[in-house]
Image 1 (cartoon, rainbow, N blue to C red):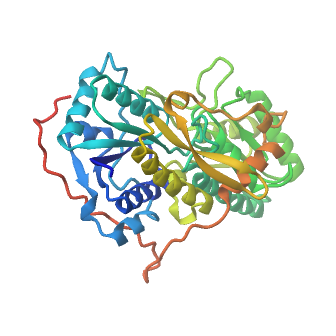
Image 2: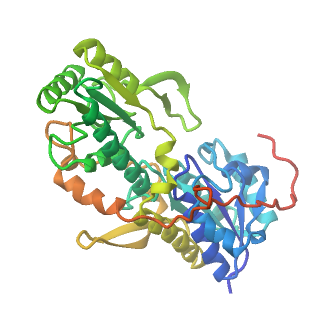
Length: 418
């Protein structure tokens, strides 16, 4: 009989399906008679002992959580450094775990979160505290190592593909007397998975997006402008999809916003679409429109991929099973067993093989000219955006999303001072 409490926390930027993972965690734990606490605002909630008692939520509310976007318990960008530098913070986490009999810690996030879960597991072992730590995958950037795909990516990719195809129809209709070039900015700091996904919107080289700019290839302005001019001359208009993380050959971000670093030490990016649009207008004298969908890419639950939604729940359920089996310091990853028909399964991977390893697109996924995707990329990505995930609508025409009660657990420790 399993003993103790399970603590679940969300980390980093949320996705359209991260709550589906939370729902999977809670439903699986309830089926196994395990109490689930959730940290308010991610790891900060654990440090502050701001914990939520999910047992106060009804079964229907937890079920509805599976189709609600955002982060139901709150997330945060807060990076714990090494065990040596942040030793006091890791010890504080163990104090909170002990106070609330937490024996299972599930941290739902990306690379940095996998690293934190690994370090917490190491500290617990050093202090001989019985704790099983599981990293649960999540990121729209699709840059986690080992797993075939990251839950969150498929839905963001579907939103991107549909948006680009619809925008292209608009541009094509107006190109004779109006906009000739449309620039769409996709998320993706170091890996251009989302920008690449936009390539699914068209089938031929003349279909939109005719140009995709990837972080994996150095940005060459002369070559870019030449390609835009060539496409407009041939097709009559041009749709460009650019990853926010494109760089010059010297490593500088094209969209460096000059706003310093975020909590994870990443350069603040923003404005690559507007910059490219300005260069096209100035150098080619073409009318240009641009868009920065930003958070819309990761919050668009109304057009979530069924594949992604099912995988998001599956990793949550598997995380609980792995934890109860004592599979410490692992992550439930998605393994593709077949392309056609598309089949997948969940397996456990050591966190040390995931943490701080970044998965970039294979060279074989990029066209030789650097402006589009190959058949191999299409074969990999197409199954990930398939299907529509169920979403109930109210009489007002809006999705019926759930807001949990999030009842706080009584604190047992002195207040944490950062």
